[in-house]
Image 1 (cartoon, one colour):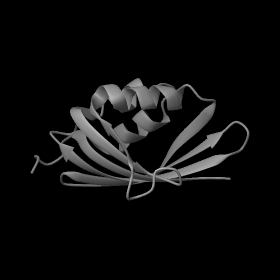
Image 2 (spheres, rainbow, N blue to C red):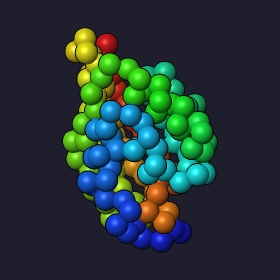
Image 3 (tube, rainbow, N blue to C red):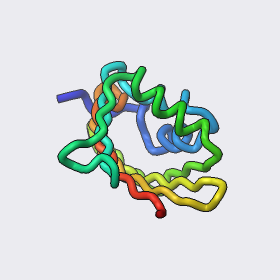
Image 4 (cartoon, rainbow, N blue to C red):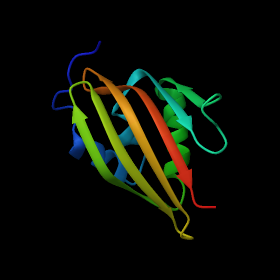
Length: 121
């Protein structure tokens, strides 16, 4: 089990990362060997999209942050070496996305994340 989250990870740090204009601040919150499992309409629980390491995570975040959209941290709870948060996003055409994440922290960095997301259709 990882060590408890210290000052390197808190709701304010996460908010600045999510609500920034580029992916770099958010990517800096991930451990080098982090893993994200994404579940949504296209990648369902039995076959989630899995990203391994900061390179793959960075590519996804660069793609997301290159889009004409806003990101907002709605809620965040950090307790010990875990955090849970809700993020809302809106494209310029009004399409909205809501994502909920549960993360495991190691040395103040995100080591493992499960993200559930829903899109307007």
